[in-house]
Image (tube, rainbow, N blue to C red; front, side):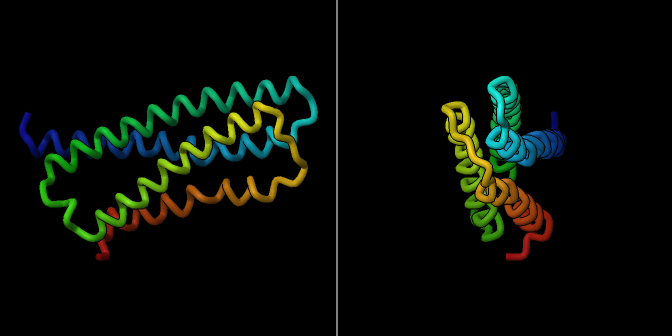
Length: 144
C-alpha cells in the first residue's frame, strides 16, 4: 500500500472512531442525569448497565481514534511542531481526562449517589461540545 493511500485510510478511520467516541461522550453524561434522578433500584441498575456498556464502546472508539491519530502523526512528520496541532493535542489530553471523569461518575452513581439537583451534571453534559468544536476547528482551519 502506498503511503498516500495509508494516510487517507488512516484519516478515514481516525474520523470514524472519533465520531464513535464523541457519540458516547455526548450521551453518557445524559444517562448520568437520568441515573441520578432515578427513584427505584431497578431503574438505577438499568442505567448502570447502560453506562458501563456505553463506556466500553466509547473507550474502544477513543483507543482506535488515538491509534489512527498516531499513525497520521507518524506519516505526517513535522506536524507536531505546528502550533494548531500542539493546541489540538492539549485538547485531546483534556478530552481523555473528561473520558476518565465519566468512569468516575459511573462508579459514583453505582455507589449510591442520588440527587434531584442535577445542575452540575447538566453542565458536565455540555463539556464535550467545547472539545468537539475546538478540535474540529483547529484540525480543519489550522488557524495558528
